[in-house]
Length: 262
Image (cartoon, rainbow, N blue to C red; front, side, top):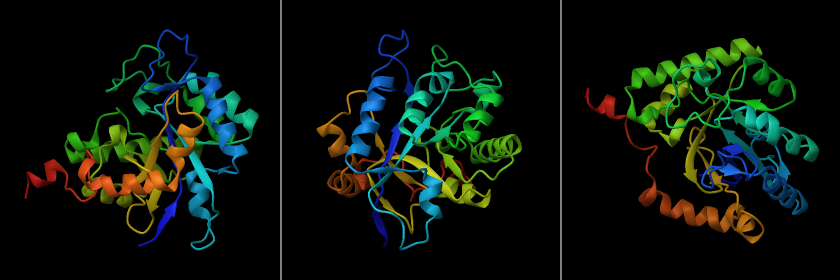
């Protein structure tokens, strides 16, 4: 079993604390984003994208590296996060919601305060070096909808981004963390090679869980010693041990609609 210490930080909305739609459980201010990333860089961490990490041959992957991921990105990301990331010369993995861009229904997010990205915005982010990945079409929990619909969302969102950017999309971030063994296999069959979950922790089992990589949930107050603890191997080990008992979704489980047909 190949276990590595590779913290993947999970962000959502970036906006000032005085923004009318700032929510502490899901938003981080640009100032604190800068403090968090600057702290990691000062502590000797190198920030790379997840795809860059896996492009290194097995056995020669760098140590003390971390990745930044931003789910449900909107215009707020372009306005508030990109200037910080460019100033610090780091790139991130970003996951737009397809239906948000086309003004179609999306779920599990209040539309207030989440102005949609345009296709031009997404192209520009790609050209700046951000790694674009799929986050589905409607932001529904794939584990809770018929698997045929989940597969359709994974397929069509991948095709959309590939047509838009002219490159292969390797990574899928499962909305709401909904994942199971059938979804992971379906994603691989569609051509995804990396899957991002909401399982907590900084230790990755690369030979079995590459389709359900763990992340460190970052909040506005994750600063200083709290940030050190969150990205530590000890925290990752503790989460690794507790995961089988605490995880809301499990990679070992089958999809409910598949079980219903057995």
